[in-house]
Length: 199
Figure 1 (spheres, helix red, strand yellow):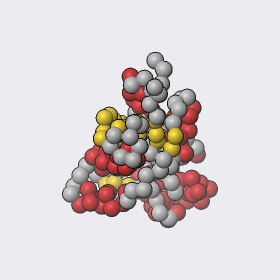
Figure 2 (tube, one colour):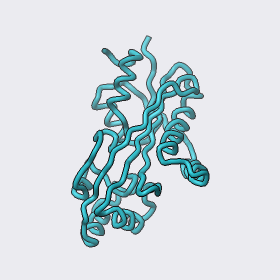
Figure 3 (spheres, helix red, strand yellow):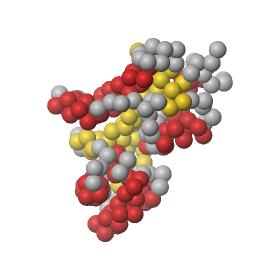
């Protein structure tokens, strides 16, 4: 019997990654208040890694509790810049300010994934990528956000590396799939072991 696999996310990039890897799945979008969880955990001085992991688990658990017999994948990504947690920009001005603050420096993307079954986590992974942003001019950053706002407003940190955002960087240390918001290879290894996909 094939075990149903559910992606608990509305992210088109995550869905594309699974589709291109020929993984059969369906999408169910969890309704969770991510901002209140972040605020609560930041108030308790939780590290960014733990925040990403908790949000991924919350999404997977929410869908898993109402879909017995399925494996449910939840993912989350946070940006750690010198200990500060940066989120998706709410305005173009906020995106410009974030990018200007990070230019010429390193930051970390933390990409968490949790798979739940029967409402309980059975697998988890948190990957880390270090990125160095070039010292881009004010003019370029402003123009970049103007040209790309419809896409970068949905991206942690205000950039998308798979598009023009690649021009913002001089170096990347880590797995490219983690930058896109999903530890794809680790997930595929787990699904192969569970025989959700062929060996």
